[in-house]
Amino acid sequence: MIDPVLREAESKMSKSVDHFGAELTHIRTGRANPALIDKVMVAYYGTPTPLNQLAQISAPEPRLLVVQVYDKSQIGAVEKALRTSDQGLNPANDGQVIRVPIPPLTEERRREYVKLVRQKAEESRVAIRNVRRDELHRIEQMQKQGEVAEDESKRAAARLQKITEAQIERVDALAGRKEHEVMEV
Image 1 (cartoon, rainbow, N blue to C red):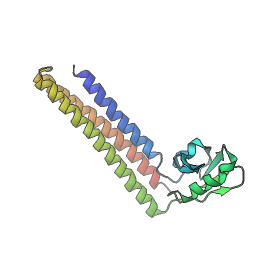
Image 2 (image 1 turned 180 degrees about the vertical axis):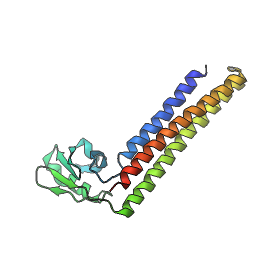
Image 3 (image 1 turned 90 degrees about the vertical axis):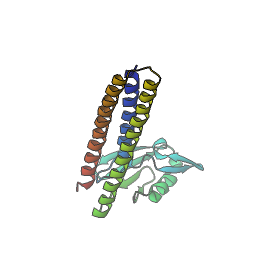
Image 4 (image 1 turned 60 degrees about the horizontal axis):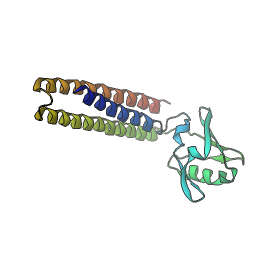
């Protein structure tokens, strides 16, 4: 009776951690990563469209991204969107592809990104704890309705706490790696 509740809790927490990991790919480091710009919104015939739907993005060098736009008539719009994004990029358009050199980060900017990583990590931890709270409430309701015994409820709460701690450790490990990557010169 309790196992499905715990499996569901672990699944929800794992999704939270996965979402956090995906968010980290959009935080800039010193190296070029196509994920940095794949969510930049481009005005494609008046409709805001993510860049990754309009172009192929590759990183042939550690400090360079190359954007190959599928519809060549939209190269100007893509270049403008990259220029006006909050990434501080200066794309160069040669008529066929857009080259986006990734400038090295300043120390101040690195510290801002570390703060952002920590903020996102805390948001993820809160989401995990919210799942724990909701599932604990569900277990308590099951106990009140007589579906599970009190000792089984307490064991389930202890198992849920262990699951929560394991997921928070995953978040901390991801955040630590990203912080190290951001501060690396």
